[in-house]
Length: 336
Image (cartoon, rainbow, N blue to C red):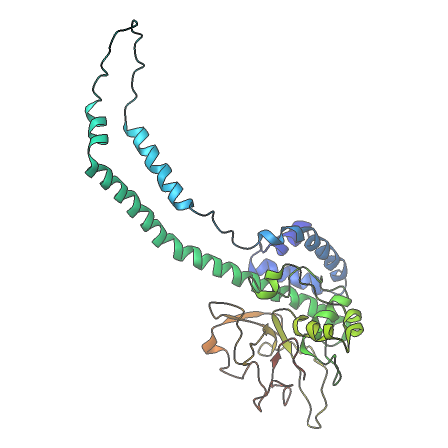
């Protein structure tokens, strides 16, 4: 694989097929580790560009200054050039020649000036009406593409972990570390995820706006157990994405999260809000879901719980599933 493909993958410049090829290469047991190391280096190199990823607000008064400039240029091009005044003897009174007819009409007709200004204002308004929705749609599409790329990148890291451990990152059955978001520190500690590269964040979220979010390592998390810092870490360590809480067997024992390559079984998704009914990650109401086989789907809220509630088990609780087919996506701090 060429280095420019990894760079394009980080920047989101590849199409869906090319991105999928990169993710398969990253999950490959033979060449995956070296590619992931190179990917981490590229992401670290691109990190200084993070503050410039969001939309840039235009300077105050830009529209008014632009209209004034256009009006000034219109007057300048409409008026014919004046000839340089001839040199006259001292004490000779020279009456200025009357302005040309067009210039006199321009400066003397207030109605024409008003009409021209109205035309320019109408043109600017029409441009705003036409461009603003396209710009808003473009921003929303860019956010969606970035969220999808993040989940696809996480899919490669998770599949690489599953290839090495024969299971996905699985929280312990009990104890303070039994949390859905433990997947992220687990990947960081195995160098499958860069702690501060923003992969676990969605565009313009509260965590991403902080600008300094990092996923703690397992060592940092264990050292913080029993302190106020621990509660802060577990609420955010999974970023803006939720992770599967797994399921319990008939005896109530929490089972490891196995990679069964099920196309219908969710593994990660936009994290649920406090109500546990939908996510607030995207203003337009979209939800992105990563499935076990590595593909990502984009759903509207009306389609979210059509076959099975994404954020609750069959008993209506934000807990581990009641059987292997009962998928439940929990927020970072949720316990199975």
